[in-house]
Every structure is written in C-alpha cells, then in structure tokens.
Length: 531
Ligand SMILES: Cc1cc2nc3c(=O)[nH]c(=O)nc-3n(C[C@H](O)[C@H](O)[C@H](O)COP(=O)(O)OP(=O)(O)OC[C@H]3O[C@@H](n4cnc5c(N)ncnc54)[C@H](O)[C@@H]3O)c2cc1C
Image 1 (tube, rainbow, N blue to C red):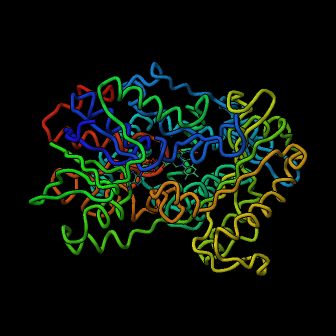
Image 2 (image 1 turned 180 degrees about the vertical axis):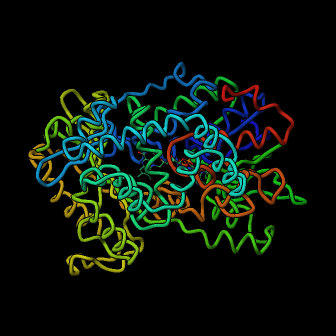
Image 3 (image 1 turned 45 degrees about the vertical axis):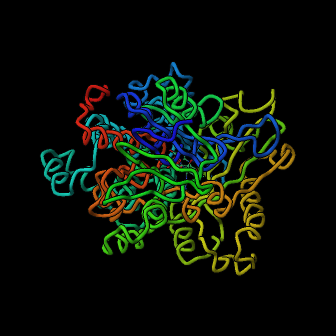
C-alpha cells in the first residue's frame, strides 16, 4: 500500500466516501482512513442480534439523499444501491388504536388526515404545493455551500413563498403546527419529526426541518436501502475502488501533520503515516479534527473557543429486535407497513420529554419511534423472521436522575440502559399485541455504546452539532469556517458537522469535494449533473 496520495479523507461514513468519490472522479489519487473494522459510519448494517438478522445500527430512513445529484453523478444504482419505498412513509399511532399517515400518494394522505380534520388535509395540500414550488431551490441550498444569512434573506425576500420559508427558519415547531393544523393528532403526526433532530417544540427554530423532511417523505418517499443502510456506503466504495481509490479500515487517525501552516498528511494511532500532496479532508467532528488531530498550538485561540462552545445536542439510544414473526400493531396494517411508526401519544407530550432531557433526566415516558425493516425488505432476516428497531431520541447524557420519581437510580448509561429499554418496551407493547411472544433477542445500545463504536457520535448524539439556528447555515460548524475550508491550508471538512448538517444526504461530502476541487482549479460543474 503506497503512503503518498493526492488526498487523504478521514472517516469512511457516507460523507467521507462521497467526497473521496468525487475527488477520484476528478482524477486524484485518494485514500479513505476509517477507524472501525467496517465502512459506513452511521450507515452501518450489522448482525447485532442474531446471525442472519441484519440491523441498521444507526440510520434506516433515506430522505435527503433521494434529492442528491451524487446518485446520478456516481452512478450508485449500477454500483448496487437499491432503494425500497415503504408505504406509508410514516404513521402516528395513538393509545386509542387510531392511526394517521403520510402515504406515498398525496390524496391518500389527505384522506387519512381528513379522518381528524378536513381543514388540516387542505392545509397539507397547500404546504405540499409550497414545497414543490421551491423544491429546486431547496436542492441547490442543500447541495452547495451555505449562503450568508444576508444573501439568504435577500433571496427569500423576493417572493411570498420565499418569505414563508424564511419565516419557517425562525419559528418553533409548536408555532408552525398551531398555525397550519387544528387536530392534535395531525400536529403530532408532523411535529414528531422535531424529535428526530433534537428540537423541542419550543425552540426558536425547527419548523423548517419538519416542513422539509415531511415534504420529502410525501414527494420522494421515506426510502430504505435493500439489504440495509450500509448499501449506500458499499455502493460508494465500489465506485471509489473502480476509480483507483483506496480504503483502509482499522486505521485510527490520531494526528494531522501540519508544516508551515499547511496540512501535509496524517499519523495513525499505530504510528503509520500517510502523506497528502494536495488535501487532507476530515469527515469527523471539529473537536477531533482540530483539538485532537491538529492541536491547539496550530490554532488561533478564537477558533479553539468556538469549537469548545459547540453544543452537540441531546443523545440517542437504540433497541434492536430479532423477531420470530411479523409484529401486529393494534392500529392495523397502516402501522404494520409504515417505514416509521411514531408512538408520540399527543403533541404536548414532546415538550415534556425535551424539558426532562435538558434537565438531565431520563424521561418519564421516553420518546421513541419504531421501524418496520422486514415489512418492505424481507432480505434483512431469515425467511418468515423479522427485524425491527426502536430509536429513542432526546435522552440526557450524562444522566442526572429519573423523571419517574427516581425509579431508575443508575446514572451510568451502561447500568441504566436495560431499565430504560424495559420502560420503553412496556409502552411499545401497548401498540404491538404480540411483541413479547415473538421476541427472539433484544440488544440495547446506549449513547455510550454508540460513541464507543463511532467517536463521531459525539456524546451519543446523532447530530454532530445540534441543529439549532445558531449552529446552522454559515454558523456550521462555527462562524468563520462554514465553507469547508479551514484555517490550516490544505485541510478541509466534509462531514455532517458542516452545512447542511446531520442526516444521510451526501451533501456535506459533495460540498466538501467541491471546495477542494475549486481550490485546485478543477471545474466542478463537469463532475456533476446539478445545475
Ligand atoms: C442511531 C442513529 C440513527 C439515525 N437515523 C437516521 C435516519 O434514519 N436517517 C437519516 O437520514 N439519518 C439518521 N441518522 C443520522 C445520520 O446517520 C448521520 O447524520 C450521517 O450518517 C453522518 O454521516 P457522516 O459521514 O457525516 O458521519 P459518520 O457516518 O459518523 O462517518 C464518520 C466516520 O469517521 C470515522 N472516524 C471517527 N473518528 C475517526 C478517527 N479518529 N480516525 C478514523 N476514522 C474515524 C467513524 O468511524 C465514521 O465511520 C442517525 C444517526 C444515528 C446515530
């Protein structure tokens, strides 16, 4: 294995691999260095419960990447990426056994919403028209460097729809849901998405995220990858290797070598070194990239201060199940087949969970969603068997106490996780009639487990920097470094700590590669189909 490359990419998550693939497409020699034994980062699929049961360890649903030019630019379908489209895209089930869903078909969604409010069904239709009218601009906003707040405002102020979108950047999810919908069930259906990204209903932003992701689910779908989420990383790997790129796993980067203010290569924990002639690109979070790999000696104190104040947001945990047969929801097939089932009992309950989480408490009733992996993708489990995951969002890390009157006394996640899982499973059993009978194996992953496997899951958070407005757009990862370039020459960023943030989108990888190639004088437009 040579040790000199044009570019070194740190981290083989989907963003690092996307970035490396574009660099290879431009003719550069590239190596991707990954600390874990497998590639994929937060798109890993592993047999974590029992042999033959393939679980998505982290991400499961694909939305933003359905808009990505990388799918075409890197020809990922011919490299093995196959999306499947569960229908409904997402469903909310309630304690009374009722359900409301966003289906692939808009009329069907409106019919579902009409059971609770005809006015809300009309509102969703109107919102969807707004999304479609601005869709191309949204794609350009995601797959491009973040605009300054000034230029963003100027652009959006040009139209009435633009002003509505601008306003949605600044209002809370509660305000948005209250303005558009009247039925609590419908507010819960859409508002539940706030919890995915760690927003409370009251935060001074978050409505834009809820509007965008639910609109993508309606328009493009809430896709899953056949065989598991890792399929996206594996397709990128095939593309990259076909263009001469290299990937090395179990390669823990410890140091970025800097000479005369320029990044010249990296050193691994085991002492091996790799030299970069043109660029070192990091897909991992700023604390590792700057404070550990580069070191404070090479950084201006103002940059160190900005990195240290990054809020990584609330933590998440997962409960993976291997099941003997198909789970049966009391709400029926609508829930049995949905990509995501939200179990949020009512709109206000989410505010309570966020408050408890931010106070450091294990929520009295933790917020979670369920996935129905095998309903759409039987390849993930042995014949007749079933894979399912619960994702718990808005958890505290560290734990200071338990909101349920101190029922859980442990404050160490390693000790508390099974008890938290039991609390969640008891609630989930109220929605799924046969859960206890069909359970073959349950594996719980706490925020600590997630961070141990992937240090990029900082603090057990999936966000890589909370998605609050003061850490978004040109504030991401921090003011002055939002354009994928850094204060060290030849060192770039390409992970979800950069615009447009968390989620499987390929966008930070795409945008990071563009910055590198622009600085090398390569015409990026010749490498992409996005216009
Ligand atoms: C539990 C969970 C569920 C999620 N569910 C969804 C979902 O359903 N849909 C969705 O869109 N998003 C979801 N997300 C978020 C999404 O998966 C991430 O935002 C996205 O995958 C991040 O991609 P990335 O390439 O930027 O980072 P990562 O995937 O984290 O890639 C970074 C890579 O760098 C490696 N690395 C870290 N440190 C080093 C080092 N020192 N040396 C070498 N390598 C290193 C890591 O091992 C990792 O492979 C979820 C996340 C989690 C944790």
